[in-house]
Image (tube, rainbow, N blue to C red):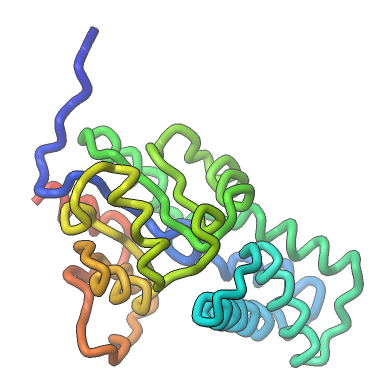
Length: 231
């Protein structure tokens, strides 16, 4: 039997944020535009903003609620704030779309290349386990990840240490040996505060969040992670 390839890299594992990093949270805008002409992008942007705000507030207050339910709450608020008529049918359509968000175009090949290099891969997400299972399956990524690590396990959200703790425990290595990849600057910085080696996928060319530190590495797309690992 062939032994698994050992990774020729300084990292023991690569762990990814899910929403916004592997899966495009704004891919819901197309459906939103169909349902609410001229308001699709505004709805998508506010929906994401409130989803994150609710996760931070609940983490700080220790009032956990599954991320799927937070996502629905954020949708309802956003439609009310924008004056959009959200009936049960439209809500179901938008939530179903969120369950199977589009992956960014380069991601699948980049993940396959990292896997072929012998690196263990994981997802560490605010999403509850059912959400991430569906998203991974819908994106054709089944079998690429060694661990799918969910907020459900610890009932809190990033940037709390208890959720970041899941990765070193799962992979059996120090946090600094894990390359943590996120398209959310606050998450990349939070992961560095925790002790990971962090990589910010800055797809939008955004300014650095002013949090007195910065990610260890920055790129624009997931293939930049492959280039870093390969050296």
